[in-house]
Length: 149
Ligand code: SF4
Ligand code: SF4
Image (cartoon, rainbow, N blue to C red; front, side, top):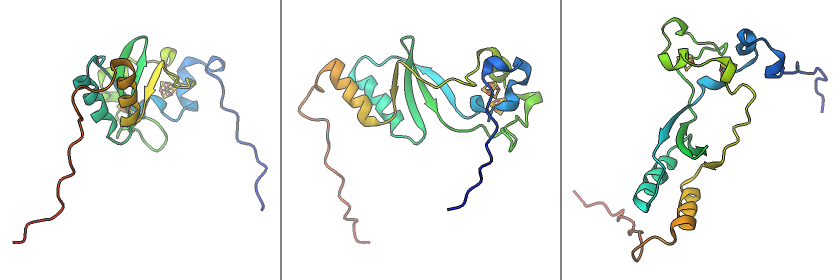
């Protein structure tokens, strides 16, 4: 098998780049998701809401410093092919408030807790709340027999 021996340039560490130039070395990491705080679930009804979030594609839930967040891994439509904001002049205030000084350029996204699937959050709820109350929360599958017209 043939292959190129050309090495890709090393991506500099955040500490090696002037803050005003950092975005030149980034793929627009902060524009490829959004995260919103959510209430910490304390009972099965609230855990079921979190379970519902996690049934959706590209959605996770994380906990940091005791606070719960939903994170949607979905790129902003204003991000252009050069990883720059094509609507920079009119970008939302939340983007204006953000700066390279506190950004996640070289963060590894390690959180206190991170849930990616409905099964993970159900298992966690079981661990801290005990078994779900009631006989079972399962319902029978709906019949697939369609009525004849
Ligand atoms: S602010 Fe940070 S994370 Fe966002 S594009 Fe610039 S370097 Fe990347
Ligand atoms: S509007 Fe611009 S700065 Fe804000 S998330 Fe989208 S691409 Fe990034």
